[in-house]
Length: 449
Image (tube, rainbow, N blue to C red):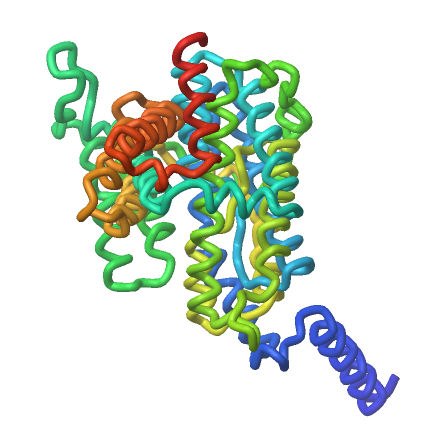
């Protein structure tokens, strides 16, 4: 083949690829290009890649195999991103949810002493319910039933819960028989490095440095290696292995117990409101509104997110959710599902780097937990602080999550206090039918379970 013929062939292949991309993602209609979408996907991946280190670290504490969870994390994220991109044409990244993984390990498994298989069963059931809600009007009814103050409080409460877990993992706080918790030992270099991880991330993120969370984790890991606190792997790359230890291991029948109702609802509500809030924010930043002023393909995006959670539970992960870090890719110009597909492909490639992930110490990832916790706590500024009957139940919801070490218990106490205070103060009109039903369910749980 001469040079001219080769050039013509390459031109045709490029043209065919561009045509396919245009057909799948409608790039011209969204005023974007393949190059822009690829760069946006790379940006989103780098900003959320920390989950590859954090999720296995948290889930392994529940007794799950680290290697298997690493592969499951990358694979579930890849499935969620690619499905989101192809089905909903949204430029967002998905991965196992922060906060939900901590609830899975520290509250359900370690706190309530359920097996991780039963906990996965609860994730699977909640995800199936989420799918049903996403393809019916039930989702809208549930969302409308729960007051805004409690929705914001749930996000903040998960943040506080995540924060106390991160502070404990870093050694910044520790148990005390006299005061429950106290300041950790700052003579320990690991405690200092845990605090340093958070400070690096917080400072870089405030300065809007690209990949701030990932940089913080890697920096502390490198310092730890220099200090001899971690051992470098013999090889950086390996074939993905171990997935059979988590794949299809959920105990659905074990989760179909009346005592698991609040846990399933906790997974469902936190995932649902976190996803909806993130998607609305992303859509607003990306200008994803049609001529009628409605968000384009929102129902498809919610369905894709819920289906990804089902896939994650089957593979061996907590609920998969849309990441707020997607805003980084959108800021780079990402406007279509091609951005999400690129993120998914990068997660697939990440499965081959498990040896590197395994050397990352828990105190390095603790900084990321603390940082994300503060971001989530910020949602409290949306609570109506001028109305006592709104902000008290909201505060109870948020505060009781870390104090009871349970997202589910925080939701129960917050929802009950809302219904009781509203009814007792003559504001029954503020309590929806759905909230009344949930209040009765939670009263029954507290009384009989």
